[in-house]
Image (cartoon, rainbow, N blue to C red; front, side):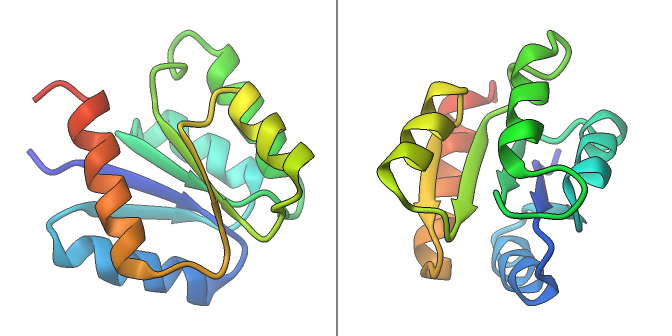
Length: 126
C-alpha cells in the first residue's frame, strides 16, 4: 500500500515541486493551501506524514502542528516543517511542539525526498 504525504503550503509551485518528486518514488501526495484546509485533510486522508509550511493564511503551521500533536487520533503522524522561518526561536518552537524535522526553504528536492523516505521508513510500521 502506498504511503500518503500531506503537503500543507500556500505556494502552489512549492506544492507541485514536492508532489512531482515524491510521486516519482511512489509516494501518494495530497495537498492543502492553508492551515484550516490542512487540518481537514489530516482528518479526511489520515496521511502517513505531513510536510508543513509555517507562514500560511487562516491558520499558521505552528497552530496546525500543535493541533495535530495534541489530538490523540493524529499525534502519531510525523511532521516535517518546511519554511522560510529559520530563526533559531522558530526552529526550537517547531521541534518543541513535536516536528520530526525543521527544514529551510529554499530546499533541494532530492534531499527532501530522501528525508521523507527516511522518516516514513523509521516512523511507520511496514
